[in-house]
Image (cartoon, rainbow, N blue to C red; front, side, top):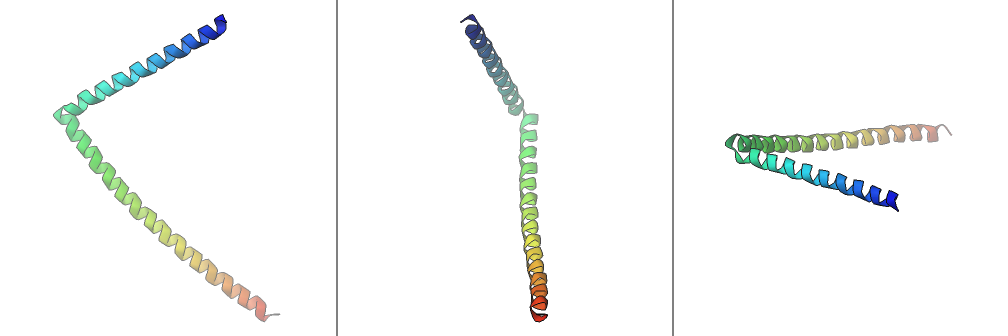
Length: 89
């Protein structure tokens, strides 16, 4: 029974440290973002993430078009191969 109690106690201690660490990180982030420099950094980060998202969207579309073109090309090659093999029979 003592072993179970010790295990529960250590789990509680870990949870409390995690909560305290999260609260401290939140407080620091809140303090930094309330300063003018922190707000500018946040706005800059948001713009950068928006640019990244737009670029990723364009890249994704380009990959989709390349996939389509490759599929069509492969289908055409397969059709030519199949039609030649049918003629030789």
